[in-house]
Structures are given as C-alpha cells and as structure tokens.
Length: 317
Image 1 (cartoon, rainbow, N blue to C red):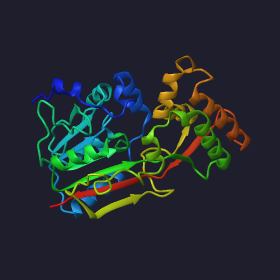
Image 2 (cartoon, rainbow, N blue to C red):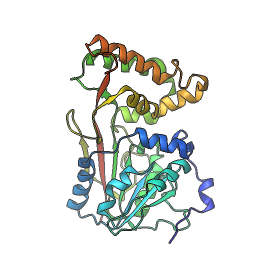
Image 3 (cartoon, one colour):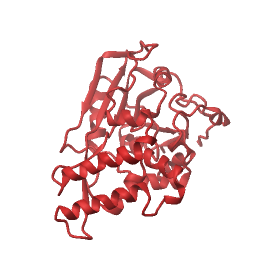
Image 4 (tube, rainbow, N blue to C red):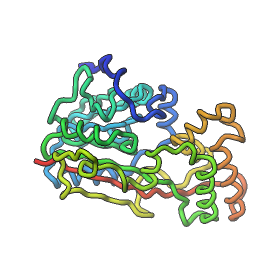
C-alpha cells in the first residue's frame, strides 16, 4: 500500500523555519554531513522501553530528517514511521529507505511534531504507537502541543525518548586543545550568537530546560513523572557513530549543517564558499592553532567530543 500525505499538511503550523524549508539537495547535504548515533544510544532506548513493559509493534520518529534514527531502531519494531515537516528531508529519507523487523518499508511522511500524523491520508491513530523518538529535534517543537499529541497517539505504557548531542567540544587529547576550544567559543560569540534561537540554547544546555509534561503551564497528566529518566553520556563514551577525528574538509561540512551557520549564510549569501564564509573563517583559525600545536601542514585533523543527553518519559498505564 502506498501512503501519501493529504493536502492538509500544507496548512499545518511549522515552528522550526530553517531545516523545514530544506529542499531535497539540502536534505542530501545534511545527511552526508551528520553522523549517525552510536548503537549504544539505540540500545539504551530499547532496553529502557523493554524493561518498563513497552511493546514493539509501532515506532514514530518525529523530526526524522533524513531518517537515521528511524532506520537505527527499525530492526526492533514491526512498523516504523518517520515524520518531518520538510519535504526535502522526507524525500531524502525515502531515497535511503529502510525496512522494519517485519520487513515492511519504513513509512516517511510530511507532518509536524505538533500534528503527529493526524492529517495524513492514513492518519496515525489514537493509542496506536509504542515508542515516540526525536533525535536532535525536540528543541524545535512547540512542546505543549507535542505532549498533547504524544498523549493521544501513545499506547498506555508507551515511551517517549528525546535526545540531543549537545555542543561539540574540542577533545582534550587534541594538540592545542584548550586554545582550539577557546577559538570555538569566541567564534560562536562573535559570529553566530546573533543567529541563535531558543532551540539552540536548549541544545547547549543538553535539554536541562526542555519543557516536560509536568513543567508546562497546562500539565499533561497522561505522563508519569515518577518514572522519568535522564541519561547523560560523558567524555569518552560513544554517542555518535564513526570516528571522533575528522579532516578539516569534513569538519567544515559538519559545521555548515548547523542551524545558526545556515541562518548566517542566508543573511550573507555572497560570502558562502569564500574565505569570508563563517565556516571557513573558523576552519582557518583551527588550522593555525593545530600547526602551532605541532601538527604538520596538510595533516590537520580535529578531534571532537559530544556529551549527549537523553530524556525517557513513560505514558501511564
């Protein structure tokens, strides 16, 4: 069966304005720059969901982007749905595809976190979902509306798992690490702070202030505060897949995928790709600092670390 979004999606309110406007080419560039999450991240979710009585029929990944988290958790669930308000991101996710535990294609659809598939041609039904995930996306949601929608579609005993990578920091083992971290901080303050929005600060705070069902003005009683779990990843614990050390071409691509950098480039289109590009300025500064630290020219690599955080919330039985 083919699932297509209804025309109603075009009238939905989209709270995030940067990634939601991506076309398919931008979605592909984003996918190539962003690493997947380490298997331990997915295993943490599966273990918690299983140990708290969760079922493994249907998962909905919200703000799915090109779909890495949906694919990462697909081997555990019979039905997998990825939702994103961006047509370009959804088109990219469909290109990558993926199948569930039951060998069913992952269903990628255009929908906001606040609507949670209510207006799709084949809507996501009430009390039909076992697990809702959002990977580096919840800071863009209208959280009170998201929690209302999550309470509607989750089964009793279902789980919501929200996680963020936090800030990328210079790994202390890297040559001249302290100076490079100072440069990262100064660059953010000088060039990017004007392009920060509240969601960016939530990421920097590792979701410490993300609105939860019991902290919003109109509390959602469907969720259980007593069973709430916050897990943090420390330095040295793998949170993203792949190598923690990358060359500066790759670093430049990763940095360019950030939302403040994207907004800076939208405001300075003539500088994009030049030596005056906000990402290139940072690259050149790091190159100099690595050489000052004894790294041979042409062999510069940057080693980063992320301190991820995950929030696990259960719907009452």
